[in-house]
Image 1: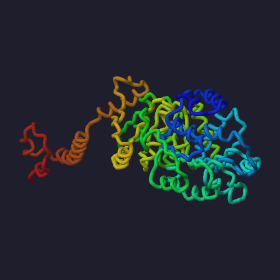
Image 2: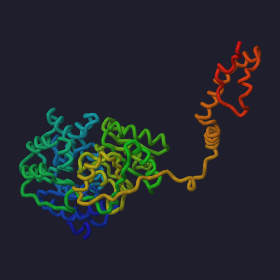
Image 3: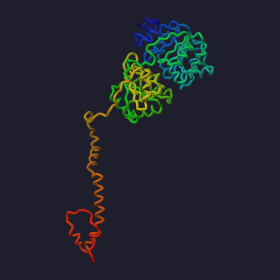
Image 4: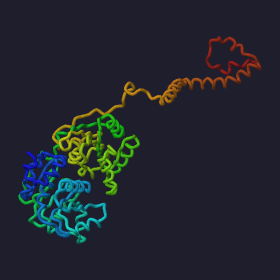
Length: 453
């Protein structure tokens, strides 16, 4: 099946061909015809399987007819993170280059001025994070009663980040006659309830069962001691055939510290975490995409939003607290049919978290021996290290502690014997002392050195 078979327009087919895609992915084959027919849809697919294009492509054709009005977007796409919203905007620009559609991006971390100006001109596609959208709505800068299509992307991530009340409020302000599309990699019960409330007889399509890891990703588990995690990671980065890698941590402070440590070790590493300004995060992500750096240390704020072709490795420096996050993290590699490797560093305390992940994905993660230091046969000695070894060898030549103690005892005995020698010089040796055999080397009792009066 080709993209022409799913019912896309000629203009859109040209844009898809220009992007280098010839055949739709399983989720695209199932979703695009239903969206073009105007049906509500629930799409369940792993990250990296093309689910973004599964709603972007048909939306472009649907919105090609009609025109936008000031402050009244014709369609709304809700995303959990700024990075993912920017990725979706790039998809619209790439696939919609032969259409005259207007688009606006509403995300936090940037000034509202330009966003408000774009809304005042009227937009066909509005891509937003829930917080910034509600902020502008409460300021009276946007009207939602003209929205024809609502897309809730990464719905399970919305749940994790506490956005479900915001989504419910936003959906309640939209026309009831709208078309609603809900996409997610996993489908927990709260998301099912959300779908039942806001979707009208939706068709559900699945490219794979929920929370199944991509079969193109080789998953491995490395057991390490907590204080050896950084060293194990450095050896893996040097020993594996790592072209480029994303390293995930659970805490923002760990991201900062690990990125700094890797730089000091000579790696071309950058970081993305929640405390960074939006402009800094975008700049760092661009450096990674342009191969200025080949290692990106990230917190889960970036797990859903990073879309880079050809990422060879994903490392979980920390085992994720939520099993679903594991699926999304490792989904940064093995995308668009490519193969990839995901390696998780786990300590003894992480055993329960690993078991929950294995239960979710339905299989055991293969164990990989912790990398060891190279043997001396593999690495010839560095000449610069010779002085240090010579010093260590000289230390072996030093007298042992017992020998030093024995010498100190003899010195003390000699000092005590000195007065006795003075007495002997004055009075002459004791006859008893003279009778002592020369082989005797023990201490000399003081009373033997005294002559009788």
